[in-house]
Image 1 (spheres, rainbow, N blue to C red):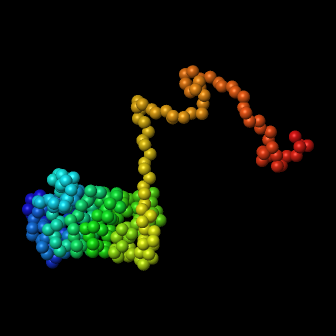
Image 2 (image 1 turned 60 degrees about the horizontal axis):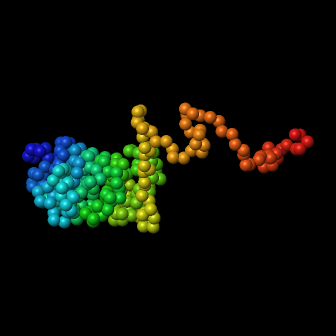
Image 3 (image 1 turned 180 degrees about the horizontal axis):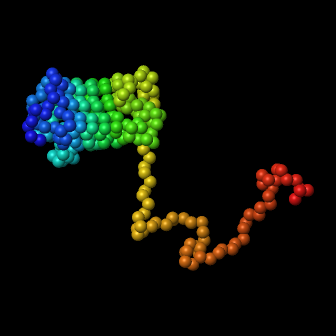
Length: 258
């Protein structure tokens, strides 16, 4: 993206670069504001994938991640914001491949309305790279099971999600729109590990017209009656004889009424 500082809203140590449809962070943002910015708002863009460093990939990153970093770079450049305390990246296209650099001072992170679905992987990553995180908001993502994006979820699902998040990030003070309570912290410590909300796998789509169907491997019918074109009745002797002794109707009918 062209160097255009006129698109930046600057208020002291607060930097806003909102609604410019950028797919990666412009270099000039980090070069110009990275050393003193405390708050960075990148909402309403098209950020997709996070690479830890655009210019020089860290030696500690695996070869697989290196190959990814050379292809798509959405949050690459964040490592230049060494004093960053608040990061807002709402309404972007960030998914489960999100990677943040280590941000030791970051206490506020909002990822509302992105494309995050794997809550466990995200929380483990945040626990590693944002040790000072106190406020986290994930509303509008599938990973956050609230009724905004999942009409089939209810308040119980959302509460279990909160317990699981607090189990992974026990230092949080505020999650989504609600303050973390002492009761939630205690519940997260005791049972949070088992509170992950699992989405059931969707059923396989029906076979399209003309596609080969797969018949059931088992059928109770005799072999001779399975072919629809060569159907015939089957007669056999039944081993069980029904006398009606255990019929519910016999409780109300006397023998002289039969």
